[in-house]
Amino acid sequence: AAPEVEEAFKREAELFKELPESPHALKFLSSSTAFHVMRGNVGTALEQSTRLHRISAEMSSPGLNIVAHGLCAVAHLYSGEIVKATEFGEAGLALLNPEFNRSIARKSGLAPEVNICCYLNQAWWELGFPDVAREYAERAIRVARETEHKPSEEFAVGHQTQSFHMDRNPE
Image (tube, rainbow, N blue to C red; front, side, top):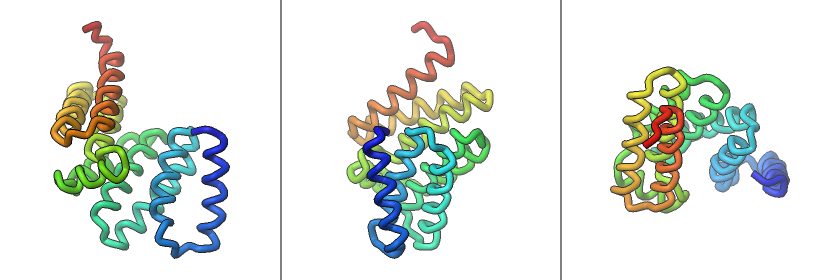
């Protein structure tokens, strides 16, 4: 989330205002949303993820719809709308199948099921349901290993470590 990257996204946003029908607009929205989440620009992330979700539903694109649900879950989680985050996350998981999960992981660098499960883990912790949260952390690791996608496995293990810290588990 370096300032240089933010400048590039600002320029890209200007270009897409001039070319709203660009086939690259959806890739921009998804990567820009992720950037704004990492940067802490939650309002922008929420706005862009909501737009991406609307467009993906209109296009009836299952893969894009899964990614949009995951991004909406993260943006709502960090905006404090935790119940809404779980709703988007659960809906995204319901759309998944192993083929989509592997395909998107190869294209984007992170398996969407792992991504969604990790943030559902965090959301359920914040809602006061540690047992449900742990199940999502374990599922994320299991899916990452079944998918044989190391970046997803590393992401899942990192989130599970946070769970251990929240659980104050010394083991």
